[in-house]
Length: 308
Image (cartoon, rainbow, N blue to C red; front, side, top):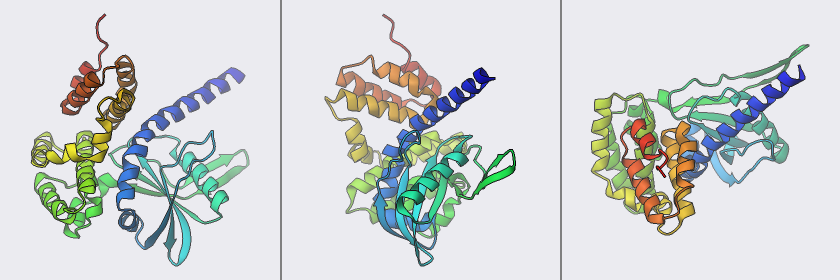
């Protein structure tokens, strides 16, 4: 019996570690995306909320880091808003959100609104999270779920909600015509903010690669639209940081993060590959090849161990 319990505990730890690895991608990407225009995005994700401040929170181990935490005013009362970004299935998300919620409330003594934001179509967690014991129900925890893949692209383009445009590739109803309209509008709205414009473009490129709900022909047409603005890719501060010449460690991290965004299950293979490479030029070339790779098979081939 003790042995079975130990195995179960080990399985839980492994699952938490895998989830932590995938979440690190959004520490560097989705979090920065939200912070670019946090006032606007908070108002969209939680209608009626007004952003006040950003909190840099890391909950003590063994709990994991939260994604984004803000102080907001909602319905006339100050709250904590916790956003957690998810790209795949996590069977323990309800328990994790409960832990985050309770820890934030304990620290700040404010009511906490917790939202799980799903970027891609996947099996989602269910709210409320119910914890039962031998005597019945112990805890019932309600949190919010926002699946971007169920949002309608046309609603955001029609209302010109440009702060959400980087996420359009993940929404339903997206096509090359709507994407082109959004790109033209972004070009005008952010013409004096090249850093935001180029980073938004980089997010759209990466998210489009991950989306699996768009028909292949339509996806190819959307890539043609993005190719019209390809110069924005090199101007993106995020891309520039990743491609920093001469900084092998930064390149290694950038490659692994890029793989996590496209094919999370290949992250370990990518890490093994780059840890064997020390030449910044070769690392940069690998980054470019991986970005251009059309499918998983091509990426896997590029990450295959080099023969001795």
